Every structure is written in C-alpha cells, then in structure tokens.
Length: 134
Image (cartoon, rainbow, N blue to C red):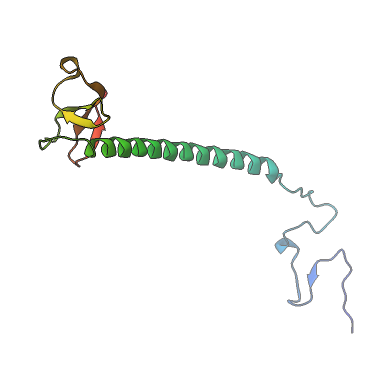
C-alpha cells in the first residue's frame, strides 16, 4: 500500500514522523517569508577593516625595517672608522671625515674640530651605535 502524503504535509518517510518544525525552511504558505541575509555589506566592511589593518601593520614593519637598516649603516660606518681607544658604553663620540675620505671617531666635540662632522653617536649596552639626536 502506497501511503504517499500530499505535498502540503511534511512527512518524513524514513523516520515515519511529521518533521515540519525541524526544517530550516518554511513548510507552509502561511509561514513567514524567509529572506536571505545580505552578507555582501558585512563582507565589504570586513574586507575594508582587514585591508586597513594589514596596511597599517605593513607600514609599521616597513618603518621598523628602515630604522634597522639605518642603524646597520651607522654601525657599519663607525666600526669601519679609525679610532685608537676602547669606547665606553653610554658615552657620546663624534664621527668625522678626513680630506682623504677616511672616517675617524673622536671624543672632541664638533665646535672644537676642523674636520668634516658626520654625526654624534653613543654606544648602547648591546654595543650598537645609535645616533645622538640631542
């Protein structure tokens, strides 16, 4: 005997139960209309936020890289310069260039020296030379 139910009746032949309340969609003409949520606007806002965050993080990393590169150049310049003393951590030293193009490190301040002044630097606790901006 074929006990096929009409289409308007929600009957599951596998479980032999009426399961209209378990369906993720409306099962009758009188049920409220289900409209899909517009996720496009949410996705666009999220994409913009993520892109902004990634771009900001990229700018931070780029600035840190440029600072590290500049620090490397200063250290390369100073460690290749001539000096006949052992620098003291925390002490400020001045870098000069001679007429022949060689660089040397000195404790003599720029106003008391006739050589071309390159910059003032101090040696930090990690033995990395940092430019003294003050």
